[in-house]
Every structure is written in structure tokens, then in C-alpha cells.
Length: 173
Image (cartoon, rainbow, N blue to C red):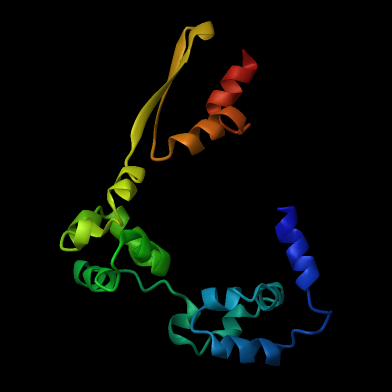
């Protein structure tokens, strides 16, 4: 958090630098709001002054990447998936389509004709697999059962994240 905060302070333009005309000029060079947000100073200024909608009023879909409800049919998703070799590439380049495909449980169908079914390699497939794990809490005569696709991350969360139920349970006892 501090690094990000320091980064903003060091790169902050002087007060009044981001005029509406400068912001509009930069917004016109960008296809989407996401692309515009990569220049965090300009995005921050536009957002603070509540003019993002004005800056993108003439852009297709008002600068949003997200499409209208109902746009992602099986055909449009397949067309989008065919642009990419892997599932990771698909996720990075079009998260809206990716999340729609995941929610509808269509990923395997969409990638069935891709090499390795869209996985980079077998290791990636294993990395995206889920495991069931158990913490035996012998002192309390209890067990905690969980499901994750990243056991190392989940272990750290259980041990150090004060918001976690397991962490809270062990601290109470």
C-alpha cells in the first residue's frame, strides 16, 4: 500500500494540470475507460471531478468494455475464445467474456478444440485444480475442512489473516 501511495505522490501533477481539455484529449486517444485508467493521474482527476461520463459520452459503449446484457451468447463467446491460444490469455484480454463463460460453466466446451484444451501445459491444469484439505485441531477436538485451488495461499490466509474464521477460532480458544 505504501509503495502505491508513494508512487502516486511522486507522480502527481501540480494542481490545475489536468484541465478538462487535456483530459478529453487523452480520453479521445483511449478506446476504453480501462485504457484511460492506466494513466492513473488523469483517471484520478477525471474521477474526482466526476467527469468520466462526459469524457466518454461519444465513445462506443461509453468507453466500457462490458457489453450489453445478453451479448455473450455461445456463438459470441466461441468467437472471442478463438482469438486466444490459452485460457490465461483469454482471461487477461477479455475478463468480461471470461467471467461469463466461467459462470455459465462453458470453459471446457469453448476450449475443447484448442491444444491442451486451452491450458498452457499439464502443470497449469494441475495449478487450476482444486484440493480438499483438513486442519486437525486436536486441542479442541475439531477439524476444519476446506477447498482451494492454491493450498499455499490458503494456508497463509488461515494462519495470518485476522478476518479468517479458522484464525478467529484458534485465537478465541
